[in-house]
Length: 125
Image (cartoon, rainbow, N blue to C red; front, side, top):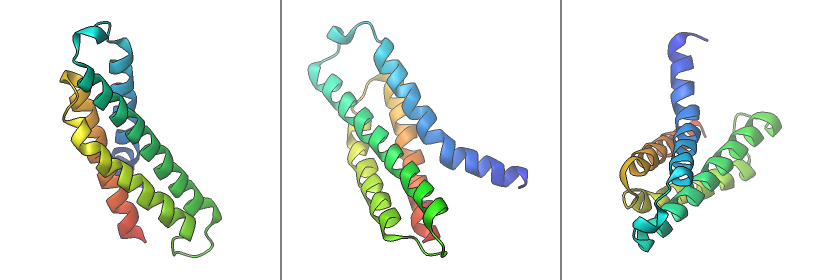
């Protein structure tokens, strides 16, 4: 594997979990939760949960395809998990722009990374 393949793998597979973890860390360490409007707190939590579930579904889909598929075609379970993860990623996009400050940046980066990952999964099918 050359360095460009390694960089693409790191970007496609590493950016969503790292940026989601960063967003969770920013949300957990915020000491002034009461200073934020309630709707921003709720939309941020909805987005964090949606992106975390989308990352988990994408990881499961990739793992299932890699370990249990004997053909180059995607198994039905991989297709279903990919569609569900993509739906959660798209669902979270409007909520990511409603977050505040650095949390917004982390969530937008996570949503873009997830969309790139799912487009790659759809293209590989």
